[in-house]
Image 1 (tube, rainbow, N blue to C red):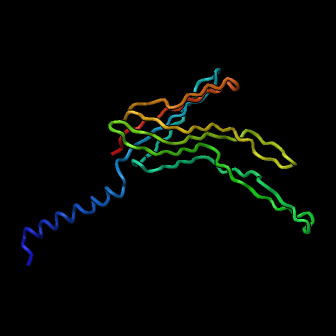
Image 2 (cartoon, rainbow, N blue to C red):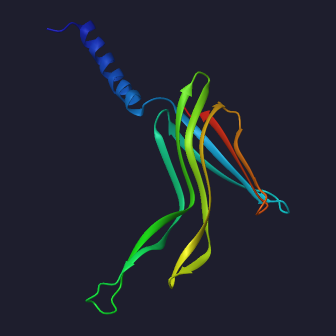
Length: 175
């Protein structure tokens, strides 16, 4: 039969096993990533848009907010069908799209990701088909930041449109 000490040890070990499994399943520490977009132009004040994501070390996170806009990508009029036209559409993700992966590097964190800000700015007609005109700012980034310290990872001053955009990232431990 089992001794009392063996049963006690087994009971203690059994309570630790689920915690161990949960830790390895998560893949590492959890981080809070705050992305702050500051937008404006030379004559106006900058407006802030802030997004917060929870990211596990070495796991990819995708964040999308906005709409899916149809754009005609092709059409076909079969010769035998008369006036029947088959139209194909591609859907564009318009709004804010953020993808990011973090890797702990000592007391700092390496960020690898892409930021995409887009909106519809009218429509254009090509061969009688109206398609949306999409204004887009895209940034692919790789940066190493200190935990808890706001870091500007991009700053854009566009002289053609007088538009300004600043992207600031703050990474902190969430657990």
